[in-house]
Length: 301
Image 1: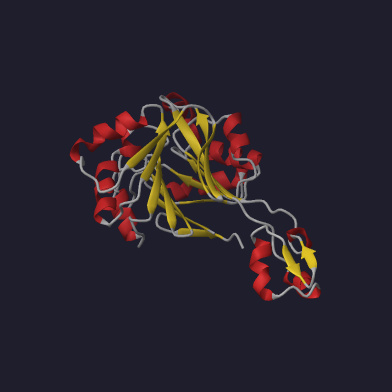
Image 2: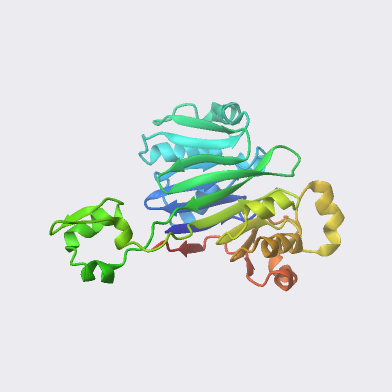
């Protein structure tokens, strides 16, 4: 399963009760952190989450409200007892950028492995969990991320009993190997259902709408997208600063056919983003906002 926690929903400047941008996705004891704005450590503590499990940090781009929390977080991860390598994914020169930030966090008890994004597509994988990216339009190189969890076919216990397959052999078949039962060779296909769609969460912030992002988010279970401005009258400002209106994010969600849209990255000049939620829902009904610290759980069973 995927546990998704939006740790920070603020853009540019943190506000009381609204930390800067960060998202944690946990899966089977491991965690991926996307962006690390100021206040991320406090948000992690407030949500009751841990630090040692963070094995991958993915950065959308190098603006301060997305990366300024890194030095302190890296130190805290070290103090949590982590000694295993930590991977940091980001646009070109990610290693140089993070190393500059680490001037105030030079000694860590674990190695850092950097992965530069040079083009759209897959950037990291570990078993059934993977990350891929899509470039979006902003002032500097910026990428949307898709976290995917592959799901195996469902085991048909009734069929296994019908074939008199001992329970001790079920896990072997589920792993993809054949078993021998009373002289018969039973292949996994005899008891496994059809392939199932995996779970997908798409995260995009600091951008203008684009067809590439719509295709990238297509059929995602959750689309987390920036909504810097709620007021439609701020359209020209959104264009000028390379950001999104609520209704523009909702339009992309509708065209991508996602299951749900979670808006984030609100302007500090918008203290009550929920006031503009009805306008977004008029475009895409399953839109919600401002649930910092709430954990969404997507089952892969």
